[in-house]
Image 1 (tube, protein in one colour):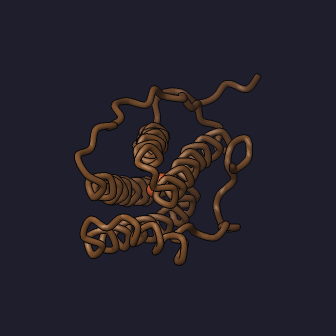
Image 2: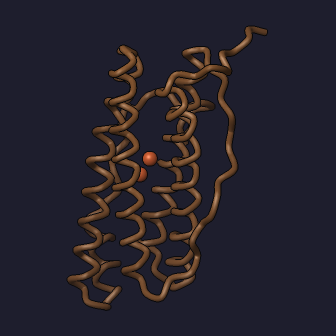
Length: 182
Ligand SMILES: [Fe+2]
Ligand SMILES: [Fe+2]
């Protein structure tokens, strides 16, 4: 078996390894959000977040695939803390929006590190994620606006989601995902 590069890693590969954890954590957090909505009998909100959880898992495994393709060792990390307690529905969407904004900052750092290290392939790999984050932040901020406008009437939010599906279309430009995208 070929020995994979373990140490020392470039900054870009250190950040990629961290991002695997961040994306898996985002996935698990969205499962918690989906289950919270499911428990409250809000199926459209639940469905949206069950779907987001799968997307985040795909992001993690796209990074894993890229690390394997470029002959780097990759660890599958533990996930970390997941928040399950919320006082009211808007809090979950605020959390989701903050999470997406945080990931956008990470992805920019990754793109910056790849450039700084003259890793052109790495910089190119990050392009899809940069675009994806614009969509994810916009999706969550739209949902937060809808939620605030509904002013506690969650049936309005459910109707809106049933009508306007915020889910994204399948994206053929997405980088390959280890084991195949779900
Ligand atoms: Fe993601
Ligand atoms: Fe995301």
